Image 1 (cartoon, rainbow, N blue to C red):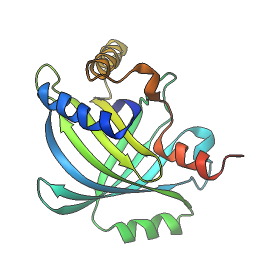
Image 2 (cartoon, helix red, strand yellow):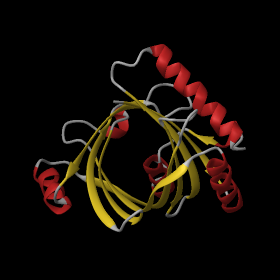
Image 3 (spheres, rainbow, N blue to C red):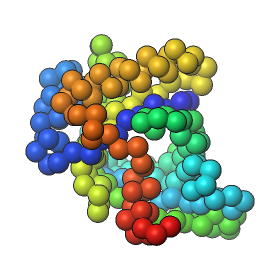
Image 4 (cartoon, helix red, strand yellow):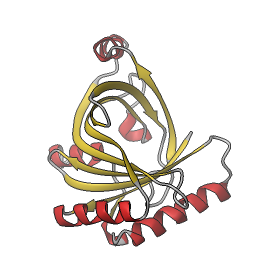
Length: 197
């Protein structure tokens, strides 16, 4: 699959206003909870240099029902531009501790953990297939992510149309383009902890 995503930084007041605006547009809450993402570096290449990502995500859902899910995700290099568009491969993992041990034994060093509370909203017509995440990331603050996942066979025209729709939705929600952030949460935290690198 190919994920097209735009992220913008928010303040507390705007975050609650955006939630209300999104629900007014027909978006409904589909998930609410806490996510812990443990990121890994490659054993044969430096993912910071290749712009790739490998993570184990543990999701602790608070709504619609209390549950825990673990996923492993690979993200390919980002496309050029303000979106965080890239190939994404993801699958469920039955035991996160065993998965971490496997990566450790294969020589994939853990780099950093990103923790956040998240509210996910799904769109209905005319926003069917679009997804909004309102995040509060430890040590970084509040963000909005708007994304659309397309099949691998999506054309460039499909990708362009989805990107334009995401920008239009961001503007409709009252988020200025100047608040768009091109870095991932991991990149922001690494820069915060290791500013000279």
